[in-house]
Image: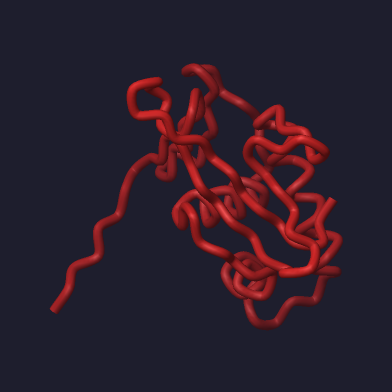
Length: 127
């Protein structure tokens, strides 16, 4: 039987995602991020380097019985995440759109230059 290891926080670059308090910090300063956007970022950050489909995000964040415009909701979340991370969709460091794959991806780099890793979320058809 395997055990599940849960982390309290995820660090990438100068950012820290506190999963318990649901807070995003940039160089120890609180960055505002709406709850749903935080949940999307946490999902992507917890799966660095993996492709995450929009459908997976819909199931995890909105649930199986979504009664809202999911596409618009996810695009809105990605905009909030990009703004919080100071990420440019034209030259992304963190959130990258893979339009044809319809996938989300996170690859990350640590804050310490000696352990250089950067976060790169890839979102499909969004923004």
